[in-house]
Every structure is written in structure tokens, then in C-alpha cells.
Length: 272
Image (cartoon, rainbow, N blue to C red):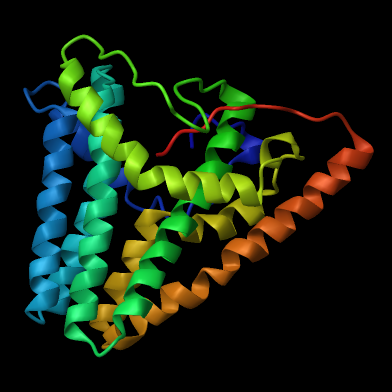
């Protein structure tokens, strides 16, 4: 969150792996490793974690879940230090995240007596939580640093950047729209005026950061090692209620701005 003004920086509970991610990125800066290689690394880490979940090695599963989270931040950091942005890397990251999330929840369902419907609803809630976090966080960034890389609804396939193939961008963008489009639309429908409201206080953004994928994986890791595997899916299902709580609080601050000051607008939206 270095791009945010000091007064609007908040404690991002989902970003605990950023310091290590920066070390990894800086160590790879002058090598042939690319951000996509790091993304493949976090995919492998996630798959290893799933293997250990299914086979009951929960400490190892917890380690690789957290390591996956760190690498998930490191690919973006490496893209920044190498100054090599790519749509391929961006969409591969997001598509890999949602597929790994689904696989992690299925593996937890497999080792517990939890209903498959609770598993499916919990996964839906997990993704809805993450979408709200990204929605609010990017709106906050856009108000101060002018991030203009994408929009709330991305309906047009972007042109491939130098060094990447348009075919790969087309495929990954199509998958991105398929997997994330419904969640984006739901969150936007629930709080379509979020970008017009007063800047959210730091404490609220910290609370919403519990919806970030890094913190979600940390919760899963902790519950696994504490022997609470049967409660993981029900927890995320119930915690989805906080989506509506946070939106309700956000709308309260929007009403204050509506009465007391000018509105700020932005139509931009990007996933971390």
C-alpha cells in the first residue's frame, strides 16, 4: 500500500507476506525468472498443500498454504521491479487463485463430514468476500494514485503487451470473465455507489482486509493445525454475513458525504 497517502494507509491483514515477497522479487530481479514463473510456483505450492490436506499432514499443508500466499504477492512484486507488466500474468494469477480456492475447499469437504452444499455455499461466500475487499481497496487506490489499468466490468479483451501472445491473453481473459464476472456484478449491485462515497476510515479497511485471500488462507492454515478442520467450511459460510455488515457501514459513510460534501467518482476496478 505504498501508493496510498500516509493518512489513508491501513493495516492490511491479508498482506502479511509482502515483506518476504519483496525479498523474493528483489532476489530474482536480475535472473531469467519471470512473474509467470513465480505464479506457476504458487500454483505448485497450492497443489502441494491440497495433497497434504487430503493425506492428513496439516502442519505441512499450513506451511504450503502460507507459502502460496507469499508467492502470490511475489509475482506482482517481480513484475514491478522488472517493469514487465503483462495481461497473461495478471489473468493467470486470478484464474489460478479461484481454481485453487475451489480445490482447497473440495479437499476439506473430502476429509470432513460437511455437506457438499455447505462446501459450495462456503466457496461462493469466500469469493464474494474477496471480491468486496478488492472492490473497496482498488477504489481507495484510484482516489489517490490514478490507477487506470482496468474497469468495473471488463468486456473487451485487452491487446497483448510486448513479449506475450494475444492467443494466451484471449484464453485467460475469457476464463477470468467466466469465473469472476458473476461475483463482480453481485458486489457492484450491492454497493454500486461505493466510488462516490467518503473515503473509508482506516479501521474499516482493516476489517474488510480479513476478506483478502492471504488472510483467508491463514485462517484455513490455523484451523487445520488446531484440529478444527470440520469448522472451516461452516466458518466461511457464516462469515459471509459480514459482507452485508461492511457494506451497510460503508453506506452509512456514503450518506454522510452525500449531505456534507462533493462526491468523488471512479469507474476503475482491478483485482490484486
